[in-house]
Length: 265
Image (cartoon, rainbow, N blue to C red; front, side):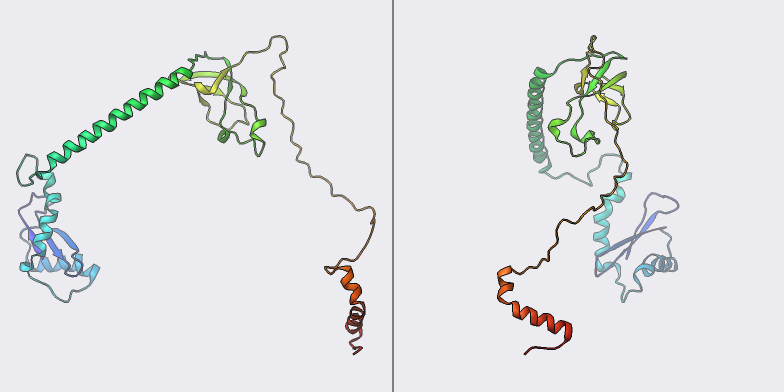
């Protein structure tokens, strides 16, 4: 064990008692004061070490060297909040400059390739992108992804409608999304991206042309079928008929033995 003294005072503590386990090299740092007496040291030792690990078989003096190495190892974390000015006690590695140059060069190359790929993707996407603008109150159709539609069940994907609706636009959200009024059966978030919306053009001659009428699901329990007549009856067995004919006498003797308990032998 050893002490780290002359530290800035924090909560009436200005020193640290360092205790190292000889077997596992586990370090315990106990806050204390530089006026810590032998009695106070013993109390701290029992409170923070003996209570957790038990009474040690031997206690080595400070010349062991382990507390000094532990202090040097953890000194950087202890002194970091108090090193406000530049100092030379924590010098830089000579290879740090070369390493950072190589890392920066690699980072610049990766960033340039990512920017080039992003511009190329944007170029090809703009060729198929169509600018759409809707107004509040417009009637539109919604294109839904397969995961968004729960009412489909196991229906064949080829028989599902490409667009669902008709819904009304409430207001514009951001630059590319709209809030819509959804029917009760459509369990999705009511803010839809403009790429999933399609303008609805109503047929003025037949107003009921695009109106979707969904059938009412009948949940009534069906009645069980009653048996009216038995058409035929036969005995089944896993043996073939020709095998039974060859052992007909043996089978009759077996049935007689089962019924009377006697044997024909």
